[in-house]
Amino acid sequence: ERKVMMEAYCKEQEIGAKRLRMIPVPDGKSFSRSIDNLFASCSPFDVLYTDKETIRRLIGKRVKVQRIERKGTISSTKIRDAIAKGARWEHLTGKSVARLIKKFGGIERIQGAYSDAAYCEGSVHPNEKS
Image 1 (tube, helix red, strand yellow):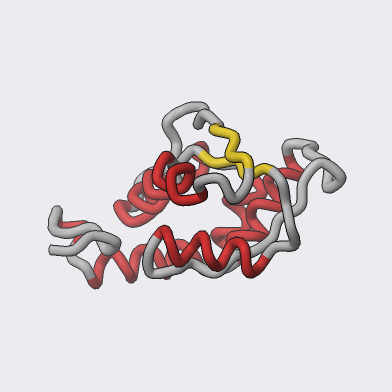
Image 2 (cartoon, rainbow, N blue to C red):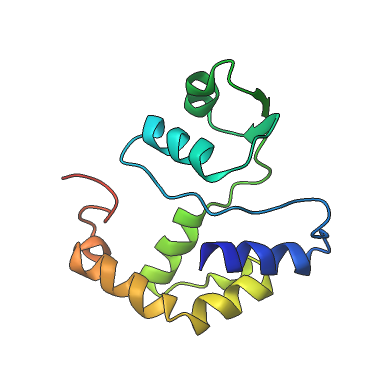
């Protein structure tokens, strides 16, 4: 779903497929494992773009790492938080992504996950340890 949303947003922003290629990489239980998954999933590449200092440090000299700056203050966590609280959220992302979140049943899934964690009552975020 994440890949589909990213592709839809790139199309919405008129970022052509010739300029980038998205390859889904399985998450790891740690940054180190995620990096191993990255190199196992991708054909050889010369440059990795990331905003994560930890990733830059762990990649070391395996490939060139180009630091990118995040623009703005929006994050997927802020979008999920807004959805969980029943607040306005569509303005925080592209129209294509908002449509897909709804189509994939994302609103119900997010609200259910946050409700299960008692997040809406001010307790623990579902991605955090208590």
